[in-house]
Length: 224
Image 1 (cartoon, one colour):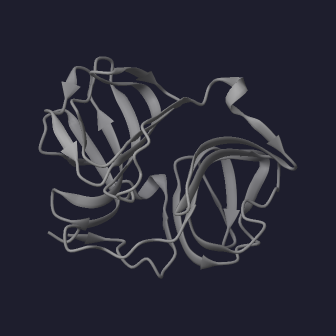
Image 2 (cartoon, helix red, strand yellow):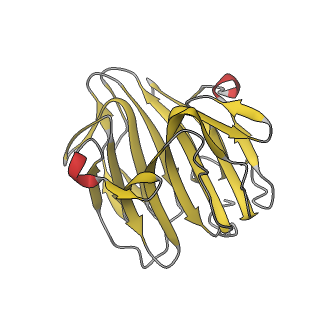
């Protein structure tokens, strides 16, 4: 399966385009934002857990990254309400579930083999945020391969003031102006290398999840 698999092209998925599909596990649905592979895939998704739903114990061969958007997501290590950011490193395992229901943003099989960090950050904590010029930033992860953060932008503030090797964002609050259009909360955008001076917060500002990285080519495992 290949969904938005050409990383040389920009991709925009708006909330109106969200197509919820059942997963193999009852009570768990997903929107496939990009995907290379079958059920075991390199994938970026929105995943929705119904109350009292769960996944069996499973391993993530190339890691898992999660941002909890709504409700409370849980596993054997704890409960993570909306606002928590999680990184489970390559070859880690868990049994996720949700008692009350949850909506999460998930990236699978996209970590370097050397990425051994287990990350748990509560982005609701004011101490996690830092003022940086025309924006406030909550750093989530940084390595030689990628930088991940939440950013709160002032009205009309450009999101990417400099050229990037590649970027991905999820709009969490407010609006973004891009390509002559305004995009609403829930919009996901992936961009190839380039400069994007016209990508900016709307008139009431914006909060975004932002990953700056080079998009790796698919491996044979990804395509299985």
